[in-house]
Image (cartoon, rainbow, N blue to C red; front, side, top):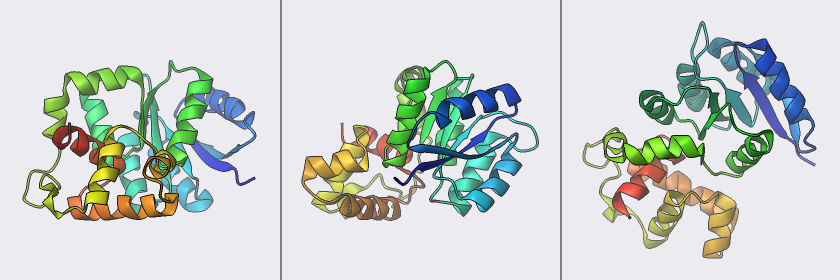
Length: 218
């Protein structure tokens, strides 16, 4: 079995060790390391090449949002799941802009955290229900954070019909595997469509694609 390789980044040792114990109980998980700030997370990504980085938003030396942005740029195969006690609107938006694949709150049950890790690893994006509420309440404001220059993805005419179908399903929160099943295509083909969508829409990550779909296709 190819295990999901997980790096934990949190400045509270108790949280790090607690998460490590919980995640190590799962047969398909391997915790490759723990660290206490964003700079260490970058160094650990270089050393361990994790599939998932479970990271606190607020840490000393380098915060999680800055680290997530750098991880997204330098290690695109490592997906960041932000895990924090905070759910302020600006923190949510900054996290989305940094390229994270999910935003979780620390009050989540362990089973839900494990489910979110698997979902992101499969190509999906995950938001805690409370964060989803914030996003929906502030939808117009958050969507305004998307680029607005010509060719930014607001004009969908450049997309093929299949790419539009994939984008619509991304907006519904489906993972690559679920999209593949829905459209009767392979998961590899879905990944290619997602890459094309990011390039054509000039967006950084899947979360922004989902926001674009919700803005333009609903």
